[in-house]
Length: 456
Ligand code: HEC
Ligand code: HEC
Image (tube, rainbow, N blue to C red):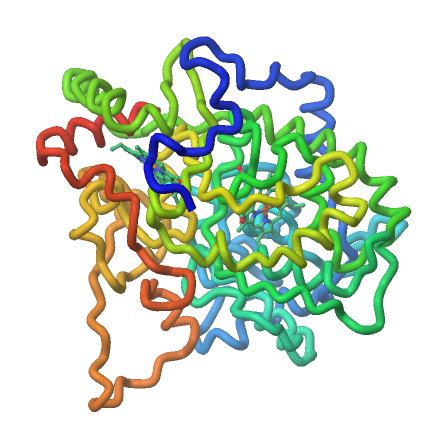
């Protein structure tokens, strides 16, 4: 571990600030178009659940619901709201974004599946966006209820999927699926012991990917890797199927690289924001880059002892897991770095829309991110992403701090759904420490800076 931020690892750091050298040339518009259709109009997994599992899920809610036959739109809205999904901003044949009908060869419905947008599709202030990470989904509840509604027992999952809304353990999903494959992707009878323990995470917004040369929170994977974003298909695809789908995912990758962040929807004070820009350039730009017509992004991987945020995502992936991935088809052209460098300082485009903050979503607002003593230890997650739950002053979701229930007095028993509305930073991987770079600002400078961040 390196001792000072001067030694921050900078993969693209040889590129001077100014100009746009680290930004790949804009993707081919024809590939982008094909990718949009490939992502938004097709599913890639078999029907995991029967059609009736969707219609019957409400029976587990304990509350009345609109009739799925008589009022399908009302039912889709209630379903989305219960599990934290969002309306699709594309034709999704009546399903909330993140679910997708699976079709038989003759085009009739065979059942349905989840797709990328269950985690990578969100909404804010009444509008849905592909690529805005889903900050409200209760992925565990969604999966388990769907299995139950399908008349099946939920699968035994050897890790925690999520303890809070909006975070999900995508890393362990991949590692467990990879552990039952050989490097050539043939199936194993006995899983390899890959020895990792990753926590649940807050997915990055897709629109920042085009600025990065490395991806994922630890910046160990080259951002150009198409195969790495196909890991979600490991549940069922064979090597030959992966190879056949690679060009389609290259198009999907091009589409992801074409996405832009939504603009802040409320008024911004330009004078205050201009003062904030100066604060940003003094205190933040060396790690997060500069914005505007001529931009720069240094793609810095910041050592743990400098950034100081929760170590579990960085240290929880074992060398054995990385070596197994690197020996496989996925890494053939783009291996994962063997160095455990730190966390990647992400581009901050559209940051107003992507609370909660940090890789694990442990900080509910920008104000608390920039004033570390103010961060709540336990806080509520919003019931929806409507504007009424948005905090335009502190920038992020309104929350209520939650006291720990004293061990002596038994707390009223909560269902896991209720419990998942509380984010608890005492849990594994969910610590809210570190990134104290805003602490020494005055309150006026902090407020100026926040006004500027709304413009990105
Ligand atoms: C179960 C939730 C989930 C699903 C489904 C999912 N992802 Fe992700 N995705 C995540 C999480 C969480 C991360 C952050 C992982 C990390 O950095 O360790 C991520 C990271 C990514 C990134 C890297 C972004 C960056 O800037 O570093 C890309 C690209 C991506 N996913 C694409 C996809 C695609 C394409 C699909 C569908 C084939 C998909 N994901 C399905 C949760 C999910
Ligand atoms: C020494 C490098 C460094 C400096 C200086 C720095 N940051 Fe960061 N920042 C990081 C890293 C690394 C992360 C990711 C940490 C993590 O998620 O664990 C991060 C994360 C963030 C995030 C959360 C991003 C997200 O998607 O959740 C915001 C917002 C942010 N920084 C804003 C700022 C602002 C504003 C300043 C100036 C006061 C600043 N940073 C200064 C390195 C830095």
